[in-house]
Length: 67
Image 1 (cartoon, rainbow, N blue to C red):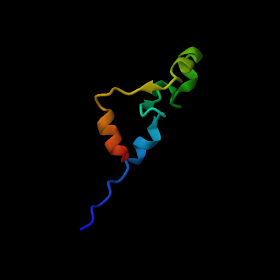
Image 2: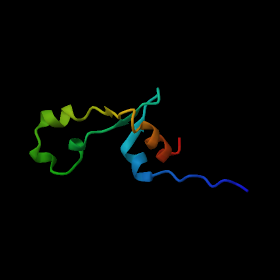
Image 3: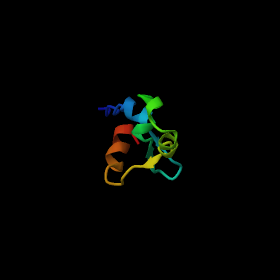
């Protein structure tokens, strides 16, 4: 009997990035394209830096990504 492969959660793979050391990074929600003209340019720059996701949910995210 062969084991079935777990499918990757595609939306999660588009929202997160895995660094070289294995940390999971995500971009801030403010950076998204909705109503960007009303947001200050300094806020958009400040939130352009990726955020490291907590270690408490890293294991479940890696499982969803199939890693």
